[in-house]
Length: 157
Image (cartoon, rainbow, N blue to C red; front, side):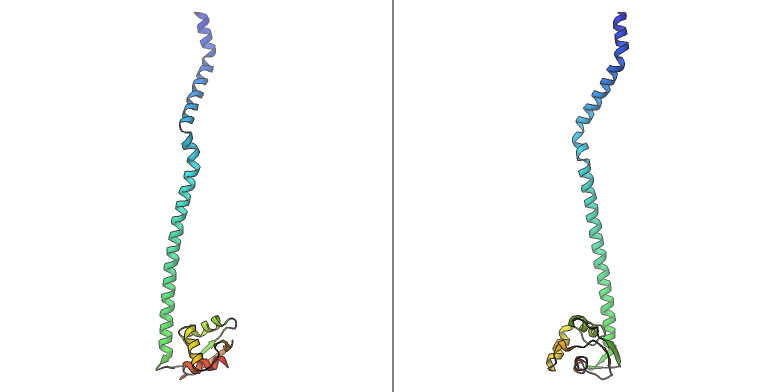
């Protein structure tokens, strides 16, 4: 009996280590799929959060753009209302037309409140027999009492 007791005493550390390893192996094999899928789950969560952040940023950008557009329209309308009366300018105004492409040059006139849009500028020029592309890059002084036709003629000479 002493011999069995000595064998158990000598081998119990090894047996205990084997039991612990077996339990660990069983636990790992039982949860292996969850362990392997964990990085994918984290990536999906991060992508979902990024999508929410992008949507929020997009909404904020749209709101900011709407506010800026409203402010520009309000300012433009006030300027245009103060500048025009009965189809003529009410005060002298100085406008700098930027050289470059025609669209950008006409935007200078639109920003000053002299025309509503490029289409209106083109319509006024065509009605007067003026080439709309003849717009010059310079600083012009528009006198009080000038009509849109007068302005088109002045900026294309």
